[in-house]
Image 1 (cartoon, rainbow, N blue to C red):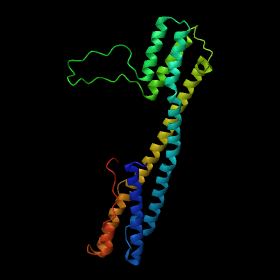
Image 2: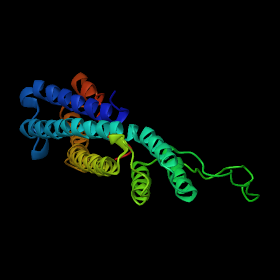
Image 3: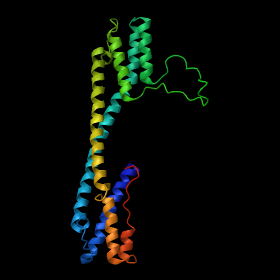
Image 4: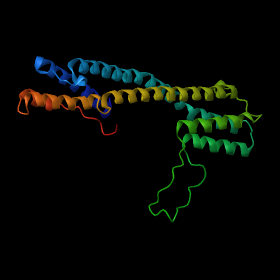
Length: 243
């Protein structure tokens, strides 16, 4: 489902097309001296805006695909970490390394290690700082530390291929690639949005600004009481407040 802001851009673009249709139907009456609002200039502007909007649409797919691929890779991390800690505890490793590993697993899975922190008398509302370290980078870092920890334990040598050290190291590398892919496609998408917003809403020559200029010109030609002007005046192309 499209966000409200994205829907707003599409509505603005559609309304800009309605403006062009209206002034086209004015025929010879629409003859502005301002070169920025001639019919040819408006039509060219519509084409460029359409291209910028399409670029954003085209950029969404690779970003969403990258996010979905990353999510799928991270989804199995909790079960992997559970298998690792069980294998470590079952291989005869020392209590200290098992304790350290369990602490990392708890961080990976978003659980508190140890007892709950005492209440802070300076914090009367009882608000606590979250112990969850669930961001993708933190989860990867904690998992990578866990792999390094078990790699240093000579007794850790499971028969299950999925949790062998080499397989886990490859898994960590893949997590990094997935994170990079998300960041790269997101940066590209954000740049496309910047370029679209610039074309649609920049001062003076942005689509939203040009509509105001067109309305002023049509009003000067036909008068405020003209049905054509009233129709054009009622067409809204609003710059979003977050731009």
